[in-house]
Image (cartoon, rainbow, N blue to C red; front, side, top):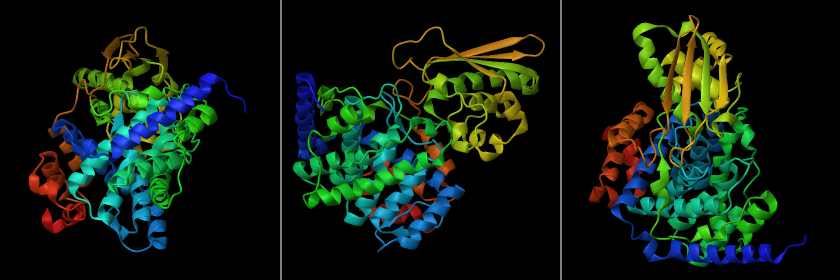
Length: 468
């Protein structure tokens, strides 16, 4: 392989940036977090933990969890599932990682495709419980590992988006989370993260819209690899400071913007650019769902969805990729614009019900999916208005209704209030862990006792019905 001087410069700058990022992450300064930043970490914790519990009740996740239980070692960490087993930290992280993005209800990162919370949380929680960390330590690890993950994602953006971010960045997020939770020094943290980057994998993005359920296992594999990368780094086994460049720019063919590894470090926070979902589908479809819900409000008063002859969805380029008309799995339905538009029109919700197996096989929804037409939207604004949608319902009598949404709720520009996210948490967890909401609400409120408590004790309280 031959390289020109520019390639070598970018590779060297990547190494410098990774060293500086690791030095910052391992320093005491990284843990001196503004209250607003620690609060964002608490929101990510409660939202993604709720998503894990929601995913844990899915049948395929339960089957896989039984496999983890059969082969697990000494009980160190909790699986947040109805049967609540305690397994070795690697098995627990793998089981929780499998559930993390199953229902498409986890928090995401708005500025570039990356679900850093889903990548790091299973490893952080398992390591914190097994290693005796406090609840405040968990929040610190979320913030710092999130920062590492999204900065690497920014520095090596995919264009086109041919590799799914869950495959590209899950190992990195988990390794960062495990290394920070263990308080590894800068050299070890760098070895862990770069070693994990060398084990990123080429999970095709099209596996999500095509409904291949293995896509949901990439966060599970990433959690295991990340924890092991931290183990190996402590024993002197790791990657190179240049590894992210070699993996992403050379092997995957991404752009390389190494200055983004450190620009604004310690003053700008990745967690501040996260978004939360109340719709159980790909975020690219959320503006379409919101516009469709506005239409449904009008529909309920005067007409019936059975009168629709066509739905026209004008959407942004990322939305135009969600073209599957006959999704074969619930995952494919979550990445299908025709299904999202049809299900919301028929059911009046963008929640889990609209993307369930029942909705997937509903004959009326299936019929309407075939009459959804996707077209490019005429005008796209600057972020956060870069994912707009305009939805038009055409009725058989020739009437047409239209509604638009420039930016779906849940991002930094239109954040959900605490009540909305806590209600979502209750919906996802109350039947399994009725005490979980109260414990997480205390963490969100920065209650001193809650933050100072050992994470293992917090887990015991969340999963024990007697504390509800």
